[in-house]
Amino acid sequence: MPGESRTPDPVQQVHEAFAAAGAEDLDGVTANLAPNAVWVMDEVGLGPFEGVDAIRAFLLEWWSLWEEHRHDVEEVVLLTEDVGFVVIREAGRVKSSGAVVEGRVGHVLESINGLVVRDTTYVDVDAARGIAERLAASEG
Image (tube, rainbow, N blue to C red; front, side):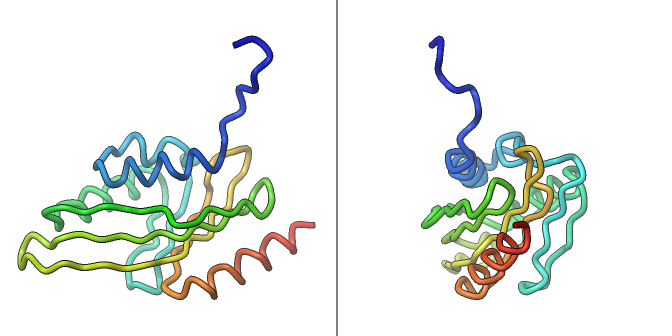
């Protein structure tokens, strides 16, 4: 409609990206990543994955491990235009054993011009929140 903002809603983009992850939709997951984006998951012993192609390759391998899986967005906080904090609960059934696995993690998202350039995943959600808050404060 005329007069409506065409600027994408970053909170909606986060929800859409994680819904795409649950649907194994590579294009949807990576739609808002900068070409040189980095996904750091040191705390869980994975990555870093540098560049969209590396992130896509990791996701394909990760998804191949699951009989079923989902990602539930519990919280999205935009601290500044370029720093966000997201809490995700991931659950699924592993193909090889049928075991049900569930985890809750915090993501600190750093963006430039609306594209994520760095996603750092933390097991300790409260620590991730603090890191995101300090990062946002350092911008100002």
